[in-house]
Length: 572
Image (cartoon, rainbow, N blue to C red; front, side, top):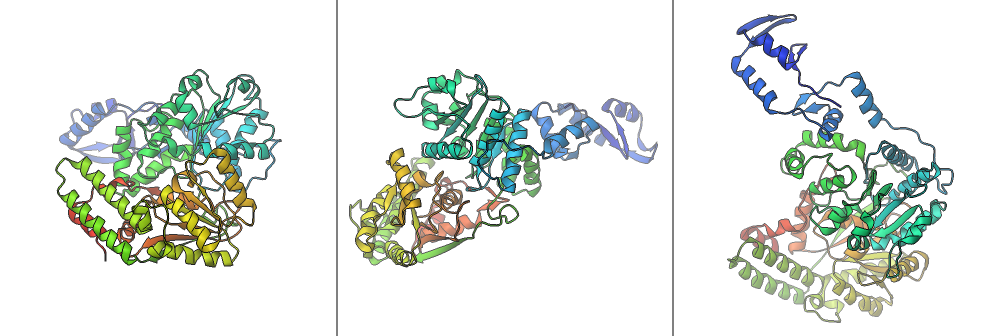
């Protein structure tokens, strides 16, 4: 692509040089071929200065301009060859399915596969950001199998797939099920060796292994690199993100159900992996897109951003019946409980002590933010159960409004023969709930948390999915919030709410995904009259802009003034 300025005088288009010659000796009203124009010397001078000081765009910026059809607010004209090029990029193309595929793709999955394959053959990166549970893995596996059948993975041409540890088993099973011809070598565990890759098409490894052995992975130029749960590289400055971006590969695919959890810079970080340099520098991206969209809520800028990323980003939602019409409904309900007297006394004590320390803090903003988050964490624990805050090993269910509500809810669900997932942010709270459920309801609930081995996780998931006796599964939000397929559950309980709606949605979608045959009831536990209720109302009000989450995770809470903070935490 090439670019040149033109000046429009009515319907006449002139080059800058021709324009200068035309107006050099003109003043006031002048006659043109198609009418008259008024020549203002100051306006002409400003126009010429702008063209002189704005260098013609080059490289990836040109592609953005051609796709968007505008540059700095002015329309862009494409010649016939450029029009054909952009049309080819945007036009869907039918691609035969691989012969060895052992699956029937839904129509939207077929479109996703065709899009992935086309971008791959053009040498472009792709961010497949379909809603969780729509089958991103199957679409990528289908693409890999097609490449193998075409001979693109022969010899030293290998694909590297990087996943969280929790997804290793899932990827192995899905490849074996859908594309048994793809040969996979898992590079993980204490006895791992790279040598068997010679006889494989795909190397499957984890973020942790890659980060610790990046020099080994850098030695090879991969035919393609695929990363699953790509929000793992949303932060530009982490060692993990930097390691991933050192990998050598002409084509890169990122997969995530939540491309933006907190801010648009996360989009930028993932795009820097899939199509390096396309969105410019972080500063230019922030000025051009992030600030207008996040702070000014500019619809026009959001529309342009969606246009320039459309060829490289595919996002479909489960709730869109045009995409998938046979998925049951997801019904979300806020369920409010009240503090017990013991909880209320503890809550008020934490508020009084913490607010005093925060208002007296003189050592700077960072220390103050730390105190604010420490207070809110303590209040969350009090709302969960006094024993959680007081670090006790056993909990009387009658001392917490939440545990009473949980037991009441579960007794009804169990009577109906249904299964339930219970999410909590805290391992300590899960450890309190396990004996409580056993003693009060006779339920032996497994607890999947960060300390459970890969083998243990797989066994818990298998039992919950297959055994009728396994009715309740407890999960810590970070360990169980992504990658797991738990469609046996028709109830999801968020025992304590996260401060980021996207993370909560990820957890819910362990049950609400393809394969789910029943409506999914989502129960969000909120302690009435406390900061939990107020924070939830604040988050709902600032939740999304055209499906782009623009809140700031947990950090925004630390920026509240003393008066706002007091209003947030005081009991009503």
